[in-house]
Image (cartoon, rainbow, N blue to C red; front, side, top):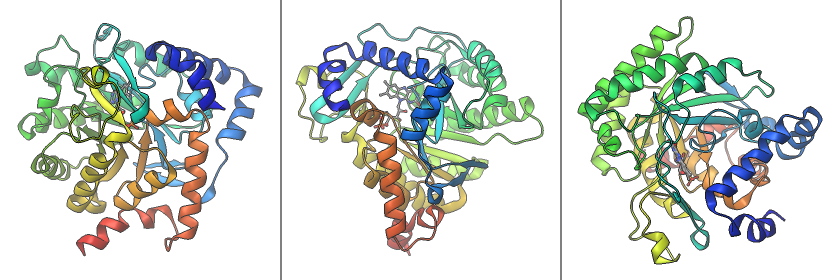
Length: 369
Ligand SMILES: Cc1cc2nc3c(=O)[nH]c(=O)nc-3n(C[C@H](O)[C@H](O)[C@H](O)COP(=O)(O)O)c2cc1C
């Protein structure tokens, strides 16, 4: 039914307008107690076998919403109501910014992909922190907070910019993510080089520790699929060296070649990051590489082109403790999370593993042992 609705309504609308419309409906439904309970009962049934502990949090499952959908932390309960086991808000920057001019979000329907050059449109970390402070939790969801660099801040002042956001937001974060991998802020991805990344991650770690006493906020870094393999290894080694809690692999790609894209070449040629199905192979490859390097020392989050329960299961076997999605939600709609959970529970039950935790990295361990 969603597919029909998508074809008849959303597909005929500008992609960003469709996003805002769907988002308004989700938020409105989540404000009505009886309705949200009914929706959650249908879309987010619990599967006890999928309960997951990661980053110090007990979660009802491993499958969460990737950053970029709820940039301003306005729909955490709505997304939880739809069945996401954790919600990563952001990317939030120290200063409010409106992002790139529209149009800036494009659908590649035949490829089950999106291209976006949103450019971190968000309310800024002071406003988002105030919103999180006011939030009255309805569903006890794990909330990740993803931070990035304000566009007008020069690369040389990036650390202070991230530190400002970390100081404001860390206390509301079940985990904090340093995003150095979006392609739509000029120079941002240069921060993935270890010489730049080391002081950035150390600075954010100290800021989170200063801002939050009594608990240690887990810190993760989110990387691009376009890193060369040697650079993936370098980030993995740095993460271990700095005692980082996790790595999120991956963000969108700037690549277009070799992905088998069949959409209108004019759309394919749009500047921005490509997400969805064509990203799956490289994201999985990066995840495998990371797991082979860091093993269980660091929590890995697999994201990029996850469409089915089988995809999510393969990420877990490759080394992901948590899995996220974004683009497939746009194409598959509100029953998607339910289907992924059901399929994951079935796969776990049919597998030789007693728990999801036992399955994490099983494929990669087989290859490397
Ligand atoms: C419209 C859009 C906006 C995004 N914004 C962000 C963002 O602000 N921060 C971020 O870390 N990732 C952002 N992402 C990347 C996603 O979090 C995710 O890493 C990527 O889309 C790959 O997952 P998918 O193939 O399931 O969509 C965005 C993706 C899309 C499609």
